[in-house]
Image 1 (cartoon, rainbow, N blue to C red):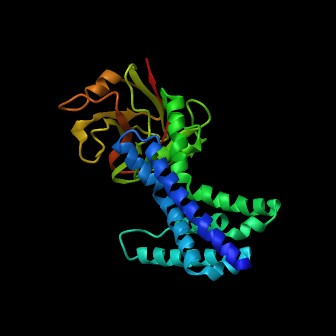
Image 2 (cartoon, one colour):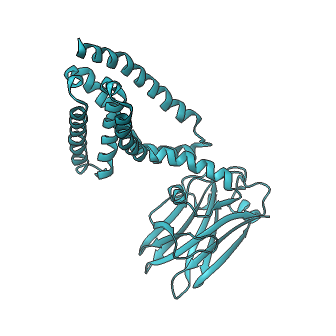
Image 3 (spheres, rainbow, N blue to C red):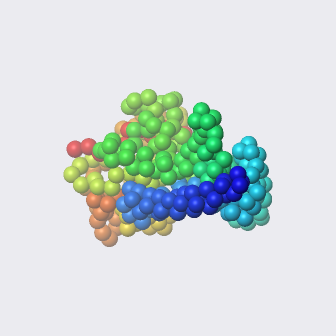
Length: 322
């Protein structure tokens, strides 16, 4: 009778949790601050790994339904068994990916484990009989795992708030979260080594090769009412280097092929700090056969081509001005 009660609670309460979780997931996708297809693509990219959490949460839920005896075990054994199963299956998936076009990742194992541990915590009736203090000791590490596994979409939402709050400053690089807005072939990180404003800047390392870039993909879209784009770049080399800055709108997110469909400016950067000032009217008229949609700017890109020797730059204080 004791175990039957637990199974009844799992069946009744567990189903409600699953339904609620799915509803909240799709509600979040619907109300997340996604303005256009480009932002939607970025949201999907940063949230992709979090899918492991949801999948293994549902997978663990199915295990509970298929193997009712799991619920008769102590909580420590439930965590152990579900954790081991998630890690073993996750490891097999990662091994299979070694033979495909995808790459294996240890982080994925952590995401898988987070989903499994969350399932035990929220679906097992065993926790309802534990004392409050003991519950807290269990919840803390589980919520830490969940926060790590769901950091992609969480970071996207926080960044969306910061983008709107700090505008017309586009990137000040004073928060480690701002790194999530960028991607590209170049190596980059928030750095304390140089700064033109505040304490931090964006260190970009361009490797030797045909092409290397750093692309800003989450930013405030409406630039109407401003006159200038301004930013500072520190050239860490003892000679000048060439860098191209591009600005594109939501109709031109394929930045690899549509060179003539966006604004491009080649910069000759001298050693030390370079203060760049570009009129928005020039940016607006940058595309060859049209005008840029200044109310719907989708992103910026800094890139170099035919790089004979690697070089390092520090980007700081990207902003609009009157």
